[in-house]
Amino acid sequence: MVFSSLIFISVFLPVVLVLYWLLPSVKGKNILLLAASLLFYAYGEPVYVLLLVASSFLNYIWALLIEHGGARRKCILAAAAVTDLAVLCVFKYAAFLTGIFNSIFGLAIPVPDVALPVGISFYTFQAMSYVIDVYRGEVKAQRNFMHILLYISLFPQLIAGPIVKYHDIEKELAVRSTDAWESAKGIQRFIIGLGKKTLIANYMGEVADLLFAAPMEQINILSAWIGAGAYMLQIYFDFSGYSDMAIGMGRMFGFHFKENFRHPYAAVSVKDFWRRWHISLSGWFREYLYIPLGGNRKGRARTSLNKILVFACTGMWHGANMTFLFWGLFHGFFLMLEEYIPFFRKESGFWKKLVGHIYTLLVVLVGFVFFRADSMRQGAEWIGKMAAGLQFDDVSMRLVASLLTPVHLAAFAAGVVASVPMERAARTKPVQRMAWPLTIALLAVCMLHLAGGTYNPFIYFRF
Image 1 (spheres, rainbow, N blue to C red):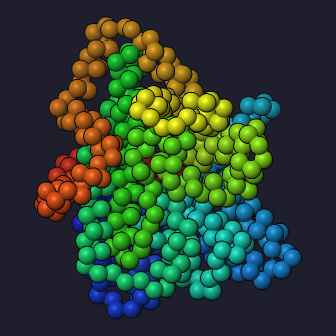
Image 2 (cartoon, one colour; image 1 turned 120 degrees about the vertical axis):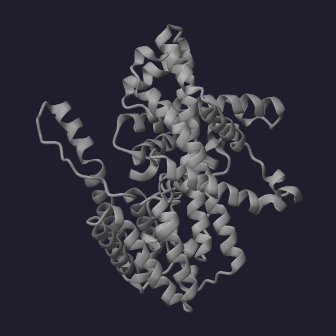
């Protein structure tokens, strides 16, 4: 079940929300949310819900052991990390690693065909952050297993984040309140995210999927740039829209999740981009990998190496494919480069911002081509087409023309405009007066879109 589906919007969420408002105690509300979260997960993963519960229970035990482990605390933490990462590797990377092993040694070991549990990367990282924070003394081990299971399985952030740290919602698991205003703001945020997902990401996804599935000989410079730009908008509005829906639902139920995106396409450097893009993931790697590796405290060369290692892991977190690894290393390379180029240490000014903005968009665009490509070869050929795909034969141009429909052009224009920070405009009185009428109209359009269409993918659904 995904948030942008009619069964979720019309049945699941309204029923859970009404029952939640009717229950008087936080304990009763927690039991309802836990039951709803497990049902939500079991709807698509009836077997793997047991893995989710087992992972939560194991990390609950690890945290208790660490708190009372004395001199053995570090060994217990290592065992917890190895266990969590081993489970993640078995389900996510077993086939990939087996293929590499076979290629290197010329063997024919059967490649495991294991279905990837939905959201395993997200809930594994949440569980690990909880155990590590207990080890560091930043939080106390929770005695109530239901609180830990709810923290890890809470359905608004279960399958696609944002990655929530335990200490951010520890108090709200035990004591929280919701009023009509908070719930209304949460509903509004949910609808905005739904609009991003269904009215921009889905239409841009149609364009990107059609082009990346086309034979390479039919792709020219125009279609290559259109496909790259469409995917760049699709992945942003797909994921940021989903994050908006998660944050909005959190507010409906009294939880306050941190922002996960802050207009990343307005960034003026790759470093700035990663301060704005998937903030919960980049924050997780910074706090639990980059800083323990030494961060920027051991000289510029070590800092550069640490960034490369972190972004290699960031790439592989997204999936078991060389394209993801390359994407991570590609970003790590430019982050390292920015450490050495004086331009990025100059004081901010108009021309620096303009040049930095164009440079960042090009780096991100090229990186996303490989992220989307089925193979490194396709990614490299696509970049070649963007640079010199100068064939303008009838077949290639018909493909381009078929994509320039009014709906797709409108979705592209809306994506470009919505990528720009508009907080000041949103705070003006005319916009605030029209906020709810526009929100209701947006919901109606989204529902019509979902009722009439079948194309409704979610890029991060299996990460």
